[in-house]
Length: 57
Length: 158
Image (cartoon, rainbow over all chains, first blue to last red; front, side, top):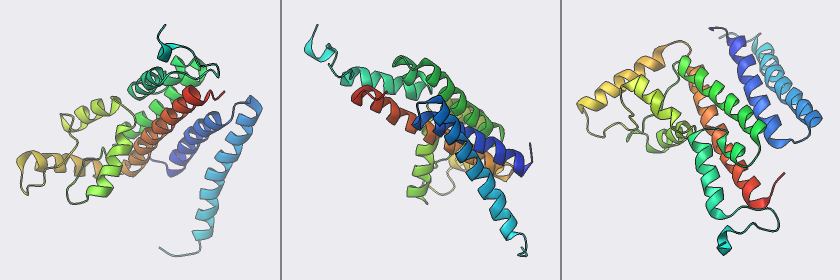
């Protein structure tokens, strides 16, 4: 896999699963935390990339 | 039953049993939780840590070597790698031909030059940065799991 996006998605998924199960006990709370973490990592990275888009290298 | 073996009224384990669970968790990620009867969590944690570690090895992540030129940074990187347990030894065997952990401080040392070359060759591949992030994350996750095992065993955490 040479896709940056693919790595972002797999990394975010692994880290979100790990922390949601580590710090929450209730299943519903785990899913909620998983969604928050995943969206924060993926959305944050894509948002930052979008903000950087107008700037030249 | 000796006093130190008696179960604690609060459900806490003895220091000895806690140590065994922590050692087991380092040897095989997730096993510490399984020994504390958190089998499903242990299996899930083991799967996540090994998935992360496997991706790190597959993408030529840098297996840190202690470098006398950068002692603090390289030691921290090595610590992150070692967190995953004996799997790190196998990965080093595959990458360097032996379980190497340090470069020699002697300039031109033949063993060290060979290691440096292998290290740089791995770092040159396009996905190595991703691989390194996966490897460090796997090691640090397992270190957090060992702290969680301590918490469960000594504080009776649910």
